[in-house]
Length: 242
Image 1: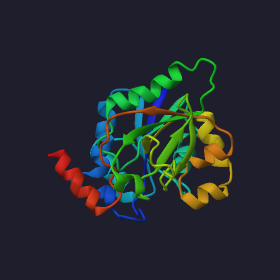
Image 2: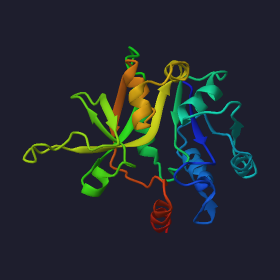
Image 3: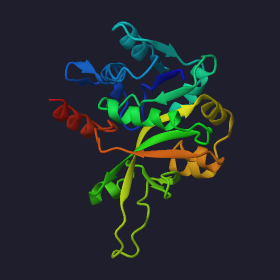
Image 4: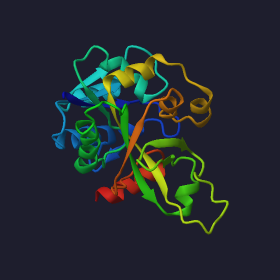
């Protein structure tokens, strides 16, 4: 299998504009993410896909690979689909540009999902982390996921799922980490299919796959890292980096 990583990178993020160009230990967040992904040595290629001249130049001027998006896109998967359509690849791993702490073990587990899927029953795979802090469980910026007995995703939500109506029941909560691995056909299908109400309501792009019957295999990891969605997240990331 030919496996590449693509890092979608928007400059004007709604909650924290310009976050990918913020300093993290002497380098920008997007460059840290790119270098961490390359350092895993898991991929035949690593490419940043962006709508921003600033981000494009940041990567290219530091010896990396980047592509400019041709169209305007609502989400990272659309941006990747446009870029990957003409490329000869089998598996595309989407590493979020604001996740500079993504590690080799977690990415390796995602890729292994497809190596063991001889019948090609799995359309995409993604990561989840067990969370216990009530503030995080209730935080709408933290996307939660529930799975079946085989770790296939049932639903994603910004609300706490499952809702703890019976507080005597011991349930585990999982945070969805925005790292995906797709079969090329699955992400091209995503690009062509219109957004439906559940995705539009939650603003969670992977819901579109569920709404159209795609199978998402979730892989548990214990690597929490820091997703940089807010200035407060950036401060946490700086402390972690030190």
